[in-house]
Image 1: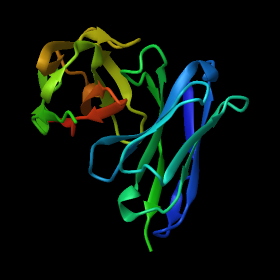
Image 2: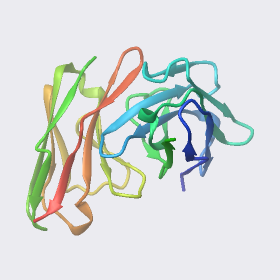
Image 3: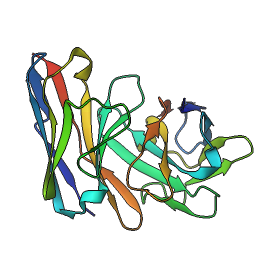
Length: 120
Length: 109
């Protein structure tokens, strides 16, 4: 069955960096576009970034543009999110999710999330 | 940017009752681009509906979606114990971008 497992969360000081990973199984990873979506404590869901199935195109929310970089390694079935210049407002659960390239409109599978806390 | 407003914020109901959740968009949304998710604490969000009214794989038929333009509704015909959760609507916009409503919590009365 489809599984997405995030890892790499933790506590980081403001201005610091961290890399999240999402390991996929149960489907052909290279056939799907992948996303990061986050949820700050007590808040709703916020889309963060998209990477095309072959890594050729990447898109970011304005709130993270220039600080976060999404990437993938299709040989390892793994998605990454490199987060730099972290701020307190980046504190959130980070979920990876997939969409079909032909139907970007909705996320059909999600992981359970990993928690990032930005605090001094 | 299209803003999605969900109401009510919290719905207190008993198992077996009908739940009606609203999602209102600040501008017209293509029906193809409107989806609903269920989210329970500590779990992965789960796709319920896409294209307004198409149920995702494995979603029981007590869940239904309707609406068009700026007003959309998720209905749960008879609440089961496992349906108590937070529900989000989501729309896809050009750029591309994805936005979510703030959520409706369905809790046990």
